[in-house]
Image 1 (cartoon, one colour):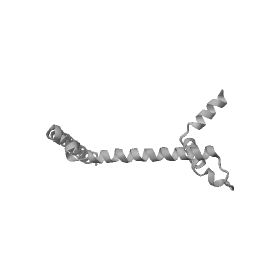
Image 2: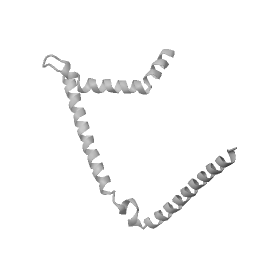
Image 3: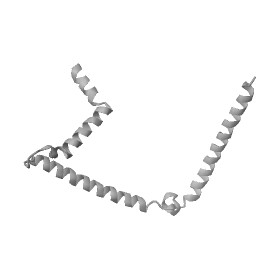
Amino acid sequence: MNLILKIIHFINKKSTIKMLAVILIVGIFFFHTAYADNNTSTLLNDTQKRLSNGVNFLSWIWIFLAIIAGKFMTNDVVYGAFMNLDKYLRAIRNVMKNFANFGLAAMILYSIIRYVVDKK
């Protein structure tokens, strides 16, 4: 039982997972170049074709999603102008900016007073 727990603990380390991922990627994509003859495994070829098709499909999905995100990155959508939220968001931003400025000024004053008082 302890041996199984040690193996599970070893596999769950980040470095082990990265190492296994690299071995898997190299084994799947670059293993066929190690053969000296032309008789490659059909299972290997099928797996490479399926993975290639899957990666191509996912890249098309990623491109489609990036195009949609780019279309929605206009000021009207980002700031909510089409729902008349831009006025309220600007007011909230100004209040938060004022609190941050007052907090920064208070920290600076505190450090100056502490420096003056502690100096002997």
